[in-house]
Length: 303
Image (cartoon, rainbow, N blue to C red; front, side):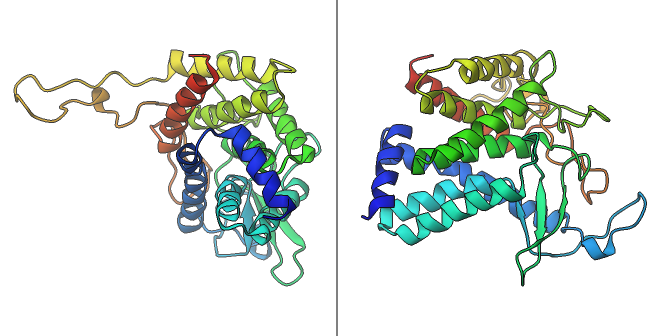
């Protein structure tokens, strides 16, 4: 491979211990891609030309756009570049990561959820949300996607700009946390809103990566990750599943007292004008990262 793919091999070796673990890690990107697809299907990106001057439901339609959560998708693209010895794919991923640093991150290190681009000029037409509180607020899970996405991108490239970006996004996330360390769905101070444990756990995983990338020069991110994890464990775990007593040999009967997930109190979309609005429920992102965090802590020798 060329220079960039040599860097990929070195960086990925630091982040994961085997090809099987690397494949497991790329499932993060599948989660992000699934949320992108849902956002497109369920609540079409609002047209800047049709935005009402005052409040009220917004019209939705397809538009060329990009979301902060696509930083997660880059993990899969780098993996394919590494396996196929294709520097071109790695370069595409790196350029995308650099673009989002400019288009999606505010001066205070909070993030926009969605950016609408002109498909002819690539100029930004509008910045907005599809799942947060407002266009000007910071959607918590979007911020968490950015933390983990840029931590993973640094793991592949070794580019210190991506490490710095992940740290800055993590610092903002930590500074917004309430006393129980479980983030609300959106960091807007105008409306605390419901909790989102999926945002908490995505961020925890990213902070564990940061701790390792920094070679333990600081315990800030490890300490924050463990506090957030403790908050989730103390407030948001579903009851244990139990077997049916009246049907020997049957499958699980009452599961988690009605819950179908391990972790409760997630929020997929509480945006006021979303066609489908759901809050305070179980969510696959929370469960997936809960299990991934457990594996990572074992690998780090912390559990």
